[in-house]
Amino acid sequence: MDSKTVLEQKYKEIIKSYLENQNEQVLYHAQQLSRKSIEYRISPEEIINWHRTIMHEIEPSVPSSILRSFDVLLELMMGYGLAYREHQSLRSQQQELKTEIEIAASMQKTLLGTKIPQTDFLDIGAISVPAKHMSGDYFHFVTDENGCIGVAIADVIGKGIPAALCMSMIKYAMDSLQGNGEPNIILESLNRVVEQNVDPNMFITMFYGLYNPLNHYLSYSSAGHEPGFYYDSNRREFTDLYAKGLLLGIEKNTKYRQYKKFIQKNDLIILLSDGVTECRTNEGFIERNTLTHLIGKYIHLPAQEIVTNVYKELERLQAFQLRDDFTLIILKRII
Image (cartoon, rainbow, N blue to C red):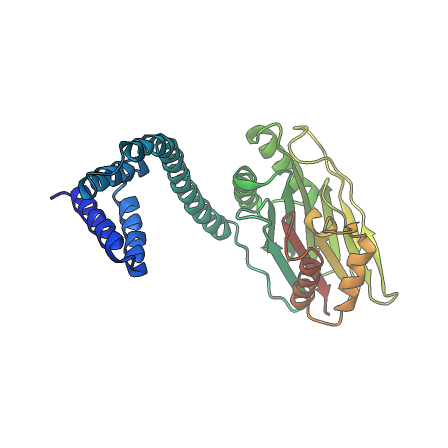
C-alpha cells in the first residue's frame, strides 16, 4: 500500500476507536496523524473525503443531510488548503532567503574584516554592530610603509544587501589605494570609483584620517560623514572634529579639502557613524552632548572598553533594538 492508503486506514482505526470509548489517548494519535499528513502533503479536503467515506461505512444509517453537510466543509477546506499550501511555500522561500542572507552576512564579515593595529603610540578601540543581518557601515585600518596609521569609516545611505555589496566594493578599492596618498587624494580616487560603479541613487559618506607617529599630526578629509569629536585631556572638553566635503558618488571630479590636527598625549579622536548620534529613545534622538557625557564616563578605561561600554549604554537606551548600523572608533595617543 502507498503512504496515503496507509494513513487513510490509520485514520479509520482512530475514528472507530474513539467512537467506541472516547479515549483521549486516541485524540493524541490523531494529532500525530496530522503531522504525517503534512509530511506526505495530504490536503485538508482529502481528509474530509476520508472522514465522510469512513462515517458512511461505520454508520450506514447516518442521515444523508449529515453526509451532505460535509460538502460545505469540503469546499471550505479546499480554500483553506490552497491558502495553507501557499503559506507553506512562502515559508520555505523565506527560510531559503534567510539562509542565503546569513551566508551573505558571514561572507561580508569575512570580506570586510580589518585588524586593529597594535602600536606603542596609539590605543585604538573599535566596535561595529549591524542593525540587521547586513551592515551598511564600514571601517578599516591601514599601516603604510612609513608606520603611519590610516583609519577609514564609511556609511552607505541605505541598508540591506545593496549597501553591503557597495561596502565590499569600497573595501577592495581602498586596498588597491593602500599607501598611495594623503586622505584627500584617497577620497578623490574612491569618489571616482563610486560615481562610475554605484547606482546613482546610492551615496556614501566617508571619513579618512592618517596619523603620523613622528609628529603626532592627524591629517584627515571627509566626504559628508558624521562629524567626530576631539577630546582635549588638559581642558577635559570635547569639540567637534570639523571637516567638510561632498558625499562620494555625486560628482565625479569632486575635490576634497584636507585638515590637520595635532594630537597631544592622552587626547582622543572619536569617529562614528550616524547610527551612534541618531540613537533614538522615547524622547527622540540623543543629543551630541549626551554621547560625549557617556564617553567621558568611561574615559579612564582603555579605548576598546570605552567603545564597548558606550555601545552597551546606547543599546539599553534603545530598548536593545538598534534602528541603524552602529560604528564607533576611538584613537588615544599614549606617548
